[in-house]
Length: 604
Ligand SMILES: Nc1ncnc2c1ncn2[C@@H]1O[C@H](COP(=O)(O)OP(=O)(O)OP(=O)(O)O)[C@@H](O)[C@H]1O
Image 1 (cartoon, rainbow, N blue to C red):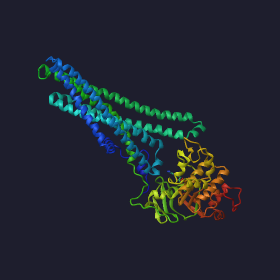
Image 2: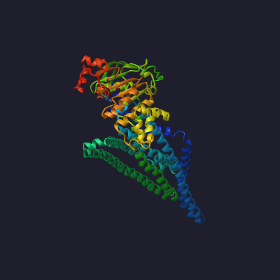
Image 3: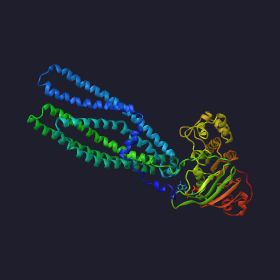
Image 4: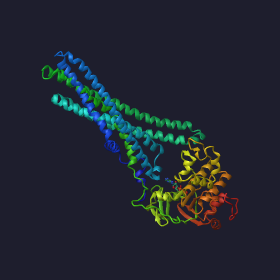
């Protein structure tokens, strides 16, 4: 991959190819595959509805032209029955078509949402660095549900209207082509108006959806950071910021409503123009006895039927443009390709000892800001290697590259002779255990969280891992034991308890390679003692990279590297480095000013 990895494609504000209305309908229809039977039922209903709507005005015409002048009293009751029967049948057909379209629509949405979520999981960590969580959430929820409206109701309406419109226009042309052509002359104006307004509406809807994403992002940030806000008494500030974002949404919505409010009267006026044409020209024809009165009445009824689709369309255009704006945001994600993915023909990673080698690695998150330059490092199999160095020197970056959260732009990383880019992500990550100071536990029970390490683990394995991580005692103290709910809907665990669960989860996973991102920050001495013991068990016999901020945790590492500005400036074990009196010694003396240089302190 060339320099500037990823940034050119997804720089903030840059858009992936927009989804056009056509591609929106194409994707929707793709997802409707396999449901042809339900769609066929809906379609038959649509045709039947159009036919029935066509027949009713014929009854009117027959009444005026034949039943009344010929005084056929006997036909009055059957006439009433026919109108009511047709109406009842219309109701039944509308129900079946609406219900079957809604079922198809819901299934399409369910699949689309699934696709989107699956795709989000394929995307690399770099993608998430550049995206706001709330914005992504609103794409999967709000944008997808807007499309739902389109599929469940509007598409059916479009289909029915399209069919009715064509059938009636053809019939009218047959009855009186001149009158009909005159009438149809108003349609190009309608199309032009619709196009003009449609484009503006779509732009406004895009702003609406973006502002929904802003509101959602704000909510996500502030609700998850509620403690921070309270401790800084920043409530008023956040309420103001929320107000501003909500106002942007309101204003964008008002713009949409104004556009619609202007659009509908224009379409209505054009409809009246059509009526005026029929009345004037039709009356003229009738006075010259070229047309019967019944035909004019039927013609006016058909005119309404012809205009109904237009009137509906003016409403549907709203949904279509709104959906198109939402679909653009969905397509933008779906069209984004992951930058870190399995190479074609990638093999499984086969580990022997688990030696990791960085050879001439160059890496930058952003073009022009290299974090690692010509970086060489070996993590010998089965040994503990520690990285120390000042904040921002690139320690976590080294760990990120081993897990292939990012790919380097230069050089390569090799595990037991296999370049990382040539093995599957699943087989690589399956061999890496990551224990960090920011423990992430998911909503669910303690058991669910532990099983994340090994979904098919037996109870005995689970308990033995918990024992090894010194987590068994506190789990047993809960009334529900391993079935205790944790996370947002369950009990809250202390920092040390969470860390021990995370260690137990990693022990259960039993990876060959363990990355430890300073897991002992901010704990009381007793917890820290337990955690150190648990960690010692986890690290034993595995290839380990310990990223240490506190030197007390790495005294016993086999080898320590000091990292500064993305380069290793010093290497050795604790004693060697202290004796050398270089950067490590400086860092050490800053943390333990009272200590004698080579004095050994037990791991605390
Ligand atoms: N996701 C990211 N996107 C852009 N830049 C990043 C990202 N993560 C880290 N950086 C930058 O890369 C540099 C190295 O960061 P890294 O997290 O590797 O340092 P570190 O040595 O682990 O620091 P600390 O000890 O503070 O955790 C820093 O300048 C940081 O700002």
